Image (cartoon, rainbow, N blue to C red):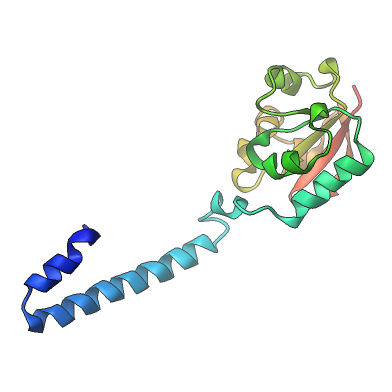
Length: 161
C-alpha cells in the first residue's frame, strides 16, 4: 500500500495533499517511537535482545577454550549459538543438532557428558532444552552436578554422576 502513496498523493487536490503528507509523516514518527520503546523493554522484546553477541558469549567460549578444551560439554544451541561459534574444539560439544542430544539431556552422565551450559530461565531461557528437562537446574543445580562457573545469564555445571 505504501508503493501507491506517491501516485495517490499526485491525484489529490493540493489543499488536501499537505494534510495527507503530514498525517503519513506523523504516523511514521509515531510508529518509530513506539517500536524503539518496545525493542528496549526486556519484557516486551525478549527474542530481539538475544540477536547480538554479548560479552558473556566471549567469556563463556574463552572459559571453555581455556579450562575445558578436551571435555564434553552439553548445551542447547537455542541461546548458545554464539558460544558454539567461538569454541575452538567443537567436536567436544554436544548441541541441539547432535544425533544423541536428547538422550544426553535426559542422562548426561550416562553418555559421557562432563559439563552442561545452562542459560538463565528468565525470558526465553525457559525454552532451553536443559531448562525444560530440569526446570530448577539454573537456579538450584541438581544432585547429579556441581556449579563450575557462573556468568551473567549462564552457568556451567560439572556433571558428577
